[in-house]
Image (cartoon, rainbow, N blue to C red):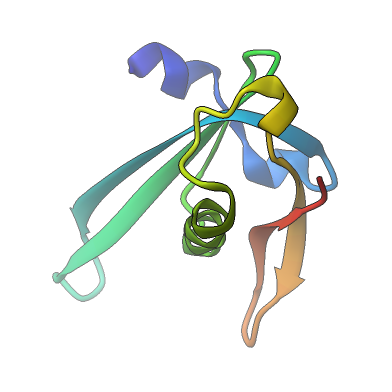
Amino acid sequence: WAELHTRAKPWNDCVASKITSADVIIHPYDKDNEDTAEMEYVVLTYMIDTNGEAYVTSSKSVYYTLQNIFKVFGLPHWEEDEAVTVQVVKKKGLQFNYTDINVIG
């Protein structure tokens, strides 16, 4: 697990990259919000491409987009001819830009 996290590229550094997914790992956890002292739900999403490269993000938008992809294409662990290709994008939010993905193949 630690090895995957260490070698994973941040999705923010991969904007405009096209990733053909071989697998997805979702790691939810709770953390303390230092400003409010309340617990916050956080999720790390890892995508491993068909070349074995790993990518990681804490973007909830990516998490929810992947949930929608799973509804259409099924759960990950796709064979290469079934693999979903996504492109990492930045989208404009109300207060800031955020990382998301678009399905391109």
